[in-house]
Length: 257
Image (cartoon, rainbow, N blue to C red; front, side, top):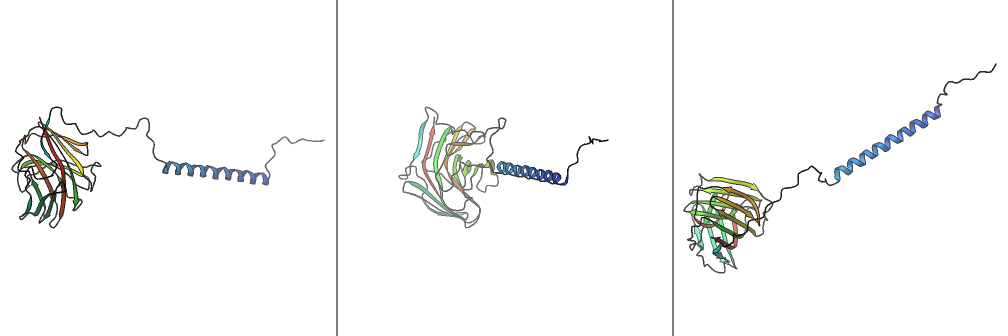
């Protein structure tokens, strides 16, 4: 009597080997695809997602208000505004101020940590509201040298707006020669500063509200009513004894109502 075995046939040894080889190949393919995907993700530039914030636009510097007129315009073709030219020496620094080739060149050698400012002798307008702009660069000196402009200046009481070739931007308030009571109103770094090049600095004063710009872009707006009017000038600061810097100014212009 013949009988039939209906139970499933077991895989022989060759079938098992083939299965294992195919499974190994699939695993290798999956691993390679994952590695490729990881490399593409790592080295591809990120893309802005739908819900990611867009970068905040830097506001442009305000324009000169309509109707305001020039009260000072110095192209430094001569010393029409009576800047204090020549050499000076004291316990703080040796300085030399010259007008040549259409620029005001101001050099300073520090005897200690020093802050220095000067103002033109013809600068008799004590403006409350004004728009000051000048082109300035550091021709030589340490990268951290501060250089910029002063305003609302009466004696040693004044505000000071400066940059350095490190990209640092400062706004300070001073009330005495020694500087112990100097108040820092603003400090930060800005990519608007161009080291070694002429940088256009702008101060726009409307009452106690001040707007500060570097190269036609606003860096900060502040409110302070300590000093309400005064003259304008220039200033620089060096950190260490024996530091030397040369700062050049051009197109120093002031507008007022």
